[in-house]
Image (cartoon, rainbow, N blue to C red; front, side, top):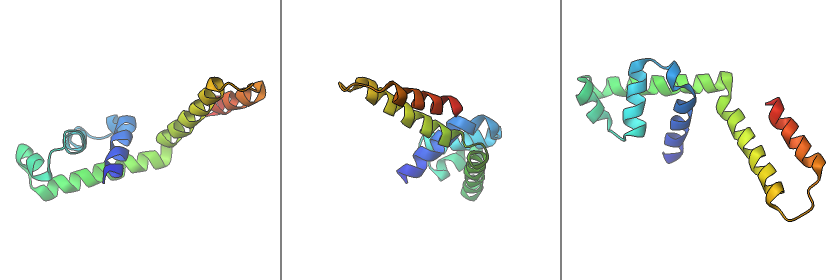
Length: 110
């Protein structure tokens, strides 16, 4: 459950502005403010089922955006390459310039 929550929050950071205002509000209340379906339903004066349906539609929309645009996937690759580069720079070993050039080229091509 925590893994799904983290994924939805990250996808929301990337694509949240592309959702409808209502979808944004539901996602924020449920995933970021930890309100229950019942609490959200009460606040908006709609059924719990309506909240559930809105939320599921919003999450599926976020997943479709990621499937097409792959911004989060690219971000993960980029982050991993930066970590690798920093580990080379932090090590006491002689650093091969070619390794660093290769990583920087890969980052540039993302």
